[in-house]
Image (tube, rainbow, N blue to C red; front, top):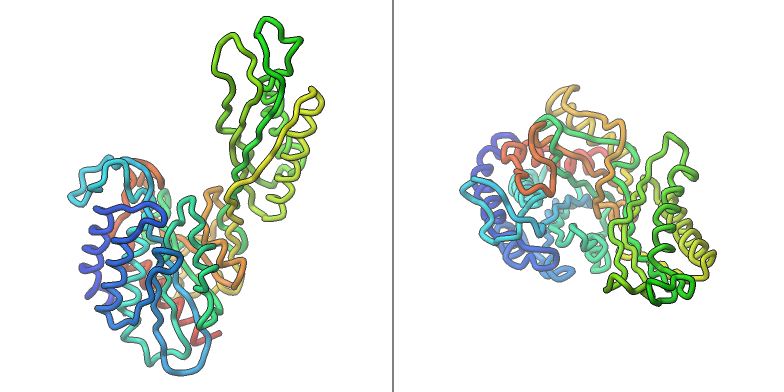
Length: 386
């Protein structure tokens, strides 16, 4: 397999750079999707496009009955202005592939090219999923709604993310929760406006909102054990338009992060209780809504073990790192894992690389051969041993 990867690798580097030059935001990945579809077609695949608007898929069918395993890559970029001296720098000011999705896409295309030569060496099918809108779009959820896990029914799914701060090309894996869940919240506090010289005639929503902000910090400290992790962050507070007017209302916005989906449900319940209770204690009202949630990414143990065994067989026992604690970043691969078994793993992108979403972030092309070999071999191993 390594010879085939090395053969196609230079071509896929060019594909990666082409995608990097032309970053596209969630559900706008039209040129990226076309490039993916063209590359798959040239590689001998029948391609399905316009799934959940811009998603792309293809199937490698062995012609022999068996299970179906899926491999997934994300395609969207971020509203970040790139600071870089690479010759393939983003040609769209204010937009950048600052999370490496261009690399993930090129990696899966490399795996798809290589796997064509293995069609007779496995049973079942391999489905390639190129997904839009991972960044704040929950594109995985939309792909599932569009039927991506059906026809044929997918039995398990694997995917990877590059991981800055970890040694280059090291495989990083974890049983259970790999990445946190996320919910955004909005709290509108309704008080009684008035003149700033007569606060006794008003119900000040700024004061009420400030009390809510402080009270929300009790959720983690008084509901989680010291060994559990969670985050409540109020990131916006909007109220008033004049210095001498107590406003009628205030709006707070923020997010919660959690490692277990039941913790997320509990945190939502507590936010509603605290916001409404604090507001009522001052004679005000609070309305709470949650927006665009993403569940925690929970790997299933047999599939995570398969990733470990694959890494060890390819690169030796020291090839992978068992992540001791999950990361608090969020990944919508979690939606697939709510439906079917699977494992999302990471490939080290270099210990000195700026973290994802940074203007100077850089995906290292030389991790692609390892990532492609891991994806392709894991899929083959799943079909041949499961």
